[in-house]
Length: 249
Image (cartoon, rainbow, N blue to C red; front, side):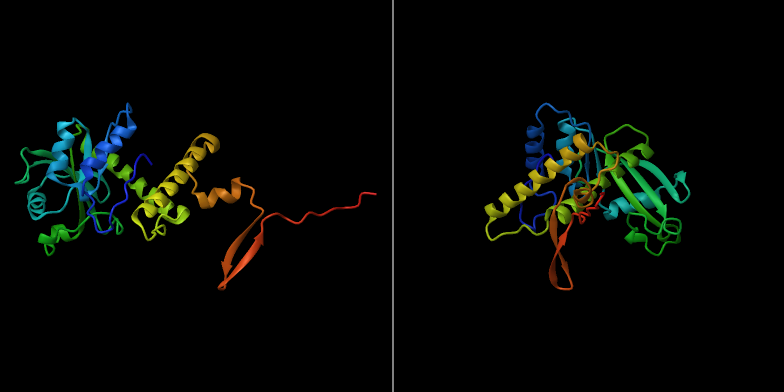
């Protein structure tokens, strides 16, 4: 984890994001960031302008505003990627944008992929052609093929696994204290612990699949005993097996 800020729980995703991004890039120093991937909470004109002015490559999921839905409705050219998956690209400009931008749009048939991510077109919910699909859209300044842009953005989904690991293995959802700075200190220690374990997995274990802390702490570390809650009671479990001595005489 390269950077973190503690903020109020009611703050929007994009609140003070540009300052956070600049702080993150400053911490990375001479490391080159080749791509920035953001979800639809960051689909804002000021963020797009900043990334383009600073010559950063980006893929950002689009919010399904009414103008965007109307643009998708008028599109009649789709390329089939796989069964039930189609893709297209359009040049799109919102009223608040000073320039037009490239938009990659994906639609997936609900019948073939019931759990497919994406949104229904709320403006055309009753239209036969649209109610059978879920749509996702991405604004980007990359010049890769539309399918590659979609695949590159999907890699961002692994960030959700990191968040889950922080919550379930490092107590990331239960560190709130009475004071802001005390909470920030607890958060900092959780981040330090996470990064130390990440380095351990990368350089010591060197496995292709990244196991969670819960998985490899029993397999890798020697634990003499530990507590476990069973039936409302704390039970002490001895991890070491009983030593059996045989008389060889």
